[in-house]
Image 1: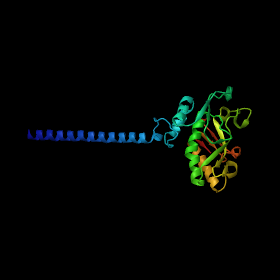
Image 2: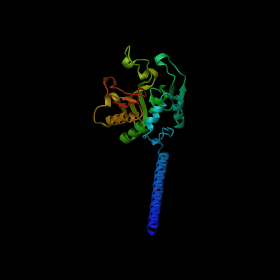
Image 3: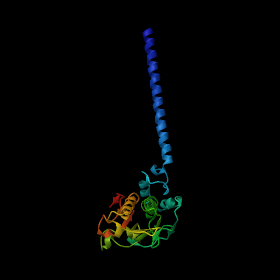
Length: 246
């Protein structure tokens, strides 16, 4: 009998220990979950459920949020509103393969000549690129603010490379824009055509801003891609978001 009671006491102690151990593990798990939730709340750029705000840093969830804007013009423009970006929602235009139901014009963006209407996803990416890549690179490399970004246009109702047949260019719906150069407030002009190759600060700047664009645009083509892009960067938000960066 004494031996049986001893076994029962040992069994109860083991059971209590296992219960306590489970409670401790659950408490640790709860702390980990809470810490992770708190961290995501403090870093919405990494939280796929947090609304996209272009003023937040670029994070692990940014690209996924940008992809979700394609085909959702209302949500895309809500992002611009939330991010305090000035824009105009223009009436639809065009027809057929060149129909442009989404014509969004950034009204306080340093594009020259003028700010052409583009799709909202392109406008969103342009804002991110300017804030997170172009302006910081201008300050870090040249110690100057950005004055304007020179472009070669956004809309062109044509097929790829102007061919008579084949796939339509992203420019046909203004879902693309071509960037040719940059002018800084100190008067310095940086040209894709003239400054892409070499070891000068201009070359370093161009490569930094090209690489920065790769995180926010679906397709980025530069002089490294082919001769047709010797004088500009091509940015678009089409394709399957495979991250083409050349």
